[in-house]
Structures are given as structure tokens and as C-alpha cells.
Length: 604
Image (cartoon, rainbow, N blue to C red):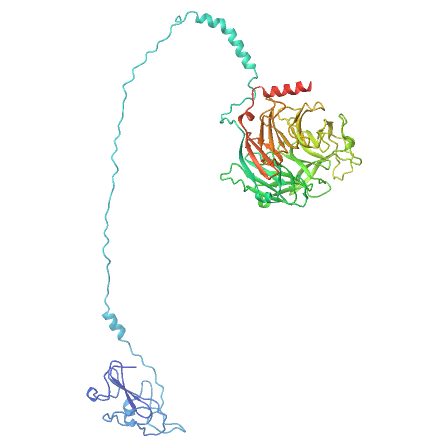
């Protein structure tokens, strides 16, 4: 423990003075009253005994590394100091030196520790005083605003004066009553005639703005497919009429089977439509030859592949779009599938079957019977020996047994009746209700039937497209590689009329869904021909240039919901959406009767 004042240490056989903290220099005699022995609480000098290793009982102060003490100070001998220190607390007189130890005036002792309370903290607490600071006072003020005063005023018109009603006298117009009595029967007769007239049957008021010309509304394409020089092989509108789909593949020379293709859709009602970025894209390992949207499911679309497989996709989930497929089995087509169509089930009109045709001569009906798989429910086969010989046909090649099918169209009036276009160029009227077995050895899990019932006069080459009239049960159109369109009646073999539209192929023909006398055709010269039989039965009313370099237009489809729209796809990989003029969308009075009359007159 250090106390204010001086202290002395015994080191190397003597005592050494040192200066304590805050004390005076101990070497100055005028400031030192002399050593004080004994208890040293509060005193300025304490002598601390230290162990002395030297056995000499007479220690020398000048021995060792320490300087000699001041000669003016007299501390006496060690023997004088030790008795006056007295025993430490809790200790008695120590024993003498042990064996082998030299006698001396100091010895080692172990003393208990001493505790000295600190007065520094107490004095610090006493001297502490609380302090505080205050920021500058914040000045506040309150303001208020007053709205502009408003004044309500009323305006009163002059009080209305009562209007005196003047009743006409029954005798004001002489002879009126007698006139009405004379013409009463005549007016009633004419009103009855108007009531029974059908002059305005089918006429609907169109409040839309009149469109005088045919204009291109959208030009759609998929750059990745164009980079591979793929062509648009088919187009289709969905059930809502807002989404158009196209299939990419090849209809010209090339190895179609090893080339991947695409199915793309665009939503034309979507804000910010990008014509070069489809809304959904599905990659297909084989060329897609045809497409058809489901009649009631807007996102389901069926496609026929070059490999012979039939697939149904759900375009609402392009990451995993595959819904059903036929797979490659004995029931699958062995040639490319050129058309697919949805057909209502006979017992369940809300359920649909999928029908496919191919150049292998088979017409197959599929149904989704298990997850992801289409199963064959019915099958038909066209065999040369079973084709009706009601018209003159080319002699089939020796060894040929099957008739290749290239086009299909169902009747709008009889769901069991359909028309087939063939590679031989002759249309066939067929029925799903036949029971005659097909004479074929084609492997199949179900017995195949022969559907052909009637044969029509042929084109000069294969038929690429057929279309049944939605307004007449017996009329249909066919287009082929001879550049002609034939208008047939199902009641006779010869065409009612034949129109030469192109010196090249005609790839597609479609009847208008709203105009009974209007149809459109796609030519191999890059044109879309629009016909109105009310105006002319020999030349097109409007010719639209789809491709500037006369590349073929392979497909076209009318929109059943938005009837002013027509989609067409070409060999450049482009789909154009055409907005038709009013003359092709508004039905004229008695147009259906004119179609009936045309069919009757030509047939007679």
C-alpha cells in the first residue's frame, strides 16, 4: 500500500528511500521529520521488511547495486527496528533460523492481507454535481386557411302559362272518315303480305363502320422458323376468335421427316401485340402438316405430323403443352397426316372425337381414353376395289390398293356425312355410318370399314382442299393442282361449275361463314381470290396480293367469331390477317334463296 509522504525499502542489505506519489523528496532533511515506526495509517513513512539473501548478520548499506543512504539519517540497526514493529495481525513470534540457515535480523513470514477502504470514490461522489443542457427553444406557429366564400344563386323563369288545348273538330276535314273506310281493307291486305314475306330473312343490321376495301391488319411471323426457311402449312382460329395459330413445316422438296418444326399462336386482342413474337411456341420434332383448334376449348389444338402421328397440345401451358398423342403403334398412320378435324360424339354432343386422314388411305377416329394417350375408336380404309364406279376414273397403278386421302370436310347438316379429296383427283362422298368391311390387310387393332358411297368427276390432278357449304346441305367446293375450283352438288357426279383461277396449283378453298355466295381460294401465284357469285360466277370479285414475289399461299381460314377477319399463310413463313370489306361480310336480302336457285338451275 502506498501512502502520501515517504517510504523506505530495504534492498541488498540496507534501507532505500523512495518518493511516494504526491509526497516530498525524502532526501531533503528540512522536509522530513524523521522516520516513524509503528502503525502507519495516516503517517508519511513506513518501513517495509524485505527478505535478505545474504547470511551476513551485519548488512552493509553500500553493498549491492543500490546507492548508499544519506549519512544524516539514522535508522539504527535491524535489531532495533524489528522489535518495535511488533507482531503482525494474526501472527506470533517467528521461530529461529532453521537448520542450514544463517542467523540474521530478518526472516520470511507470511502475513494476512490488509484491506484499506478507498476514500477517493466517496470524495468523488461528494464533489459530483448534476449538470444539464437545454437546446434552443423551438418556435412554433399555427396557420389556417379559409376557403373562398361561395354564394348560391337561383334563377327563376317566368311562371309558365297554361297551354290551352284545342281539340280539332271531327268535321274539320270533310271526307276523311269516308276515305279511311274505303282504304281499310286494302291497307290490312298489304300489311298481311308484309308479315308473311321473307324478304328480310337473315338480314342483320350492322352498326359497324362501312369498310370499302380489303386491308392487311397484321403481318405475323416467327423469325426462328423463317431462318430455317420453313413454310406455313396450316392456320386455325380458336373458339373465341381472338387467337390465331399456324404450323410450320414443308410442302415442297426436302427431307421433311428430320426437320423440326413449330406451332405458334398469337392473341390479337392482347395489348402491345408483337407480330414477330408469338404468344406461345411449341417445338415439334417432325414437320406439322395441319392444325385444328378444338370447337369449345380455346387453348386445345390438334395437329397432324409428317411422321403419321396425331398430337393435341394445350397452348395455355407452352412449357408442358403436350396433352395427348397417338404414339407410333400399328394403328398410327404410316404416311403424313394432311388434315385433322373435331367431330361431336353421337351420344354426347359436348364431347368430341378427333378424325385424321392420310395418304396411307386410312381415316381414323381418336379419343382421349387415358392420360396423355389417344386411342383408336373407329377406322376406315379406302381401297381401290371398293371405290364406286359411277364416273370414269383413271386406271389405278398395278399393285396399288389404297387410295391416298389429302383433304377432308364435314357436312354442316349431317355430322355423319363427309367429303374426301384424294391423290387421284376425285372427291368422294363418305359416311361414318357404313357397316361394310374394308378389303385391306392394313394392320389395325380394330376392324376397318369402307366409307366411300359416291364418286365425283375428277380434277386434272390431286385435290388439296375441299369445303362444304354452311348454307346448303348438298353443295361443296374442291381445289386442286390443276388450278381449278369445282362447285359440286352431292346429287350428281359432274360439277355444277368449274372456275380456272390460276395456271399453278390451288392449295386451299374455304366457304364464307356469313355470305352464302362468297368463298375464298389460295393460289400458287401468291394471291388470295375472293368470289361473290351474285356478281360473277367466272371471275373473282377481289384479288389480294399476299406475297410480292408470287410465293405460294398454302392455307387460309375465315374467322367464325370475328367474321371480317381472314387469315392466310404462305411459303415465306408469314401469316397475314386480312380485314374484309363490308361487301364480303354483310349478307344481302334473299341471298340464301339465290344460292338454292343457282344450285337448282345448274343441276337441271
